[in-house]
Image (cartoon, rainbow, N blue to C red; front, side, top):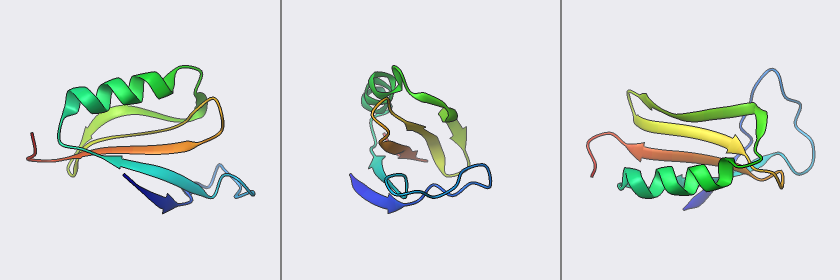
Length: 79
């Protein structure tokens, strides 16, 4: 787990409190899906991206019900 800077988007203005995110990377998709699913309950749907496949691997992002931004990644060719 690490942190990253603002999940930039033309649709969102940076304001104090939304300029960082917790970055979760793992090689066990079942564990990532479980953690993502728990955090997705009550999540803000305006920036929600469910776990999906990209060339880099399985990716998803959300802002939880407390306003904390999360980014999830299971890199390709792991687990």
